Image (cartoon, helix red, strand yellow):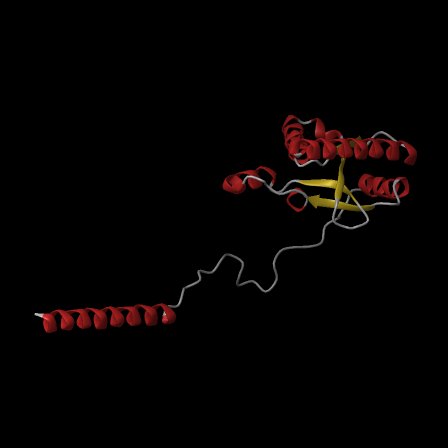
Length: 186
């Protein structure tokens, strides 16, 4: 009886090893067929450069540089480059809430990493209900992350000093938020 049991175990082990080797060899040689996507066969895709900023945005960009030369300014930045989700379980849902959103300008510390203030230059299109709702989502996402949003109206001509005053007010607001966050954790 003992030899038969040992023989059965050896036979099971050999069969198991055989199936493992068989499965692993078929996986290695299995070629995944990639379906072509429309346009893959074209030598040139239908793209051309577009204007990066409107004339009003370019003018305002120069005003910003004059108003706050001690900070870095980046333009046309996606929200997904500025903020990240803290809810790991539902990260995809929250990312989709901000997907394809951007801000006109971002004020960044000289370290090149610390986002200080988001800046929007609003024009008449922001009066549209759909656009206004998207603006509220954008503001809520940034403020939730501790990044103040400053909105300037494109039709208002502001001096560099007025712009500087508004931005420094936002920086003070950010510092107060940061202090509250630290006090809340202690």
